Length: 445
Image (cartoon, rainbow, N blue to C red; front, side, top):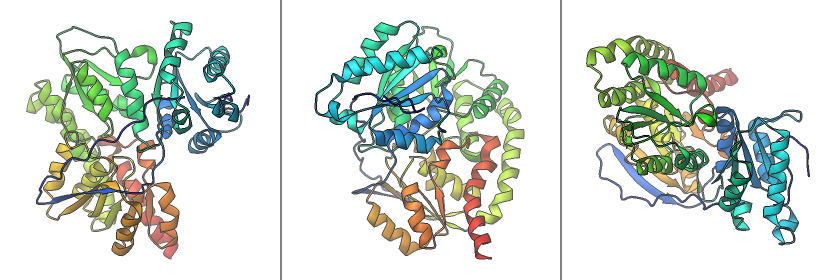
């Protein structure tokens, strides 16, 4: 057994693979052309979501049940130093497990027991399935139930899959939060409350709390919470706003608990944040005067921040490869708030109900937007090379080859790691797109 931080060796997980939603028929549209592609795709696996989830839920530990490749991916993605003490690790599936020569459940129990002895601060343990654990059909749901019975009430054990089979990397967060929904306390309180769903940086969460308070919406919870012991209660009077567009399964699980989704654009940029807050204001009967008074100053700051970057980005052509499911929202922000020209907008999956408000704003653009759901990476690369856009937003695997061909790229994964939501982050979001163009300009001097 290895003692390296972030790698907890074992002989060894499984959950059901997150399934892609079936493609819906394209809706005829004047300004948004929706295309579907199925072919070779290139994305990170859902394990990557642990990188931001373990920072958010501060008393949780994420134990990946997978291979050494999973361990190396996590250590590389998180930049884990050899002497660090992270709140994630990997239970390594060894050859003996693959050959059926060892009892994987007994080995997993041993590793979990050792982990919890070493880390008494852990209050929630996630068993995270991977491609290898799913291949050997290790029943992590049964393991989580057994371990919860053993370590309850001090530690709650939950399982979900982070497998990269037919998923995008942000679906790891969706699977994690959906697995937590059954654990949320039930409430029959008839006083309306608001639940903000999706991992946000603490500074952004604090900003939104202040904005909701200024609107007069006092009962606000965030999911996931900062501590696993503070899971929000939900019931028929709970209204929820999605902060991320990739939380399909979580939203469905919450609706099954009787909560109500508030349709809204996503809170990226000044326009998106205003529309997102307006949806909450409408649901809680906030007067227009109160809404204007509560948001005017923050919106003005956002507009002034965006004005600084608009001359650098207006008119620039951008091509977005499918990676994070943020792409349609980012496209709306780039085109409407910064004046960029959309060459093509790709997204792994397109949830039309959750993205309806952002798609409607894309519809209002004077030019037609090509929106591609799914991926045939070679075909998309051909279109990108033929178009020669000023900026390409793509995954790490495509960025270096495209840079070598003279194209300017932006890593899409950075948009998930960075605080980009809300009025006060609008300028920071614009800077993430301006920076690679400025770098290219300086290199050309």
